[in-house]
Amino acid sequence: MTKDLFDLGGRVAIVTGSTKGIGRAIAEGLAAHGAKVVVSSRKAAACDQVAAAINAADGAGEAVAIPCNVSHRPELQALVTATREHWGQIDILVCNAAVNPYFGSSLEIGDDAFAKTLDVNILSNHWLCQLVVPEMAERGRGAVIVVSSIGGLKGSSLLGAYAISKAADMQLVRNLAVEFGPRGVRANCIAPGLVRTDFARALWQNEAILDRYTATSPLRRIGEPEEIAGAAVYLASDASSFMVGQTLVLDGGVTIRE
Image 1 (cartoon, one colour):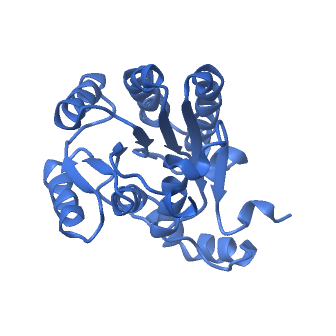
Image 2 (cartoon, one colour):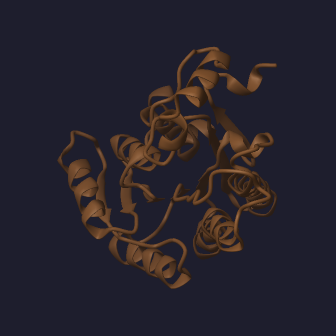
Image 3 (tube, rainbow, N blue to C red):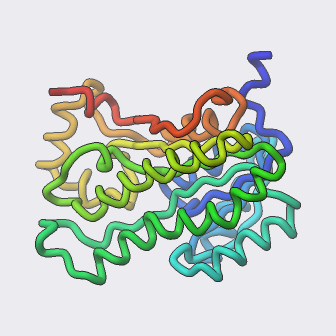
């Protein structure tokens, strides 16, 4: 029985923002455990490249590329429609795509940057859930995973709007859990700490920030994208069948420090 807990064979997963960093690692991890994965981001060429790499690997799953700009609802609808046409249904939804166009005091962020942060990091996830969750509820089974951040758990002097959006993502899965848990849909968050991705480059390439972060981390280092993928496999699989509405923190222990 234990052997099959993480088996995703036959399940279809959409992973947004999955051509690099954490999103790509999650797509590869799900496919390695048997899932049929939709690789999606704004650039078609990048999607094709990652899907081809997954299909060429030794994993039990497979991948298809379906480009999408998550900030446009018609493109999200097209993503969902194309997935259903290709594989029939959607069993796993991973909302990973996010933006952080501003780095600095929350009193100085412009309205456009603030709105963009909330639109991409919250509204697009809400839209996708509206498009996918009813199908899952009708079948009585499904897993929604939102990639949040430990920024949503504490205040920030440099990432204010981003932190607000990530806290809202945690509430989004709690709401989904209460409403759709009784119908077999499990929604949970992953909250990574600082991970070595292009998205977080401004943080880990800043020596002062990196030194301060690693000095307070019990593991004395930042994370790697592949270290987040296992959490997504867990939340997508039967191994987490009794977990819903929760935020799983993977931060090297930073948030447990004084």
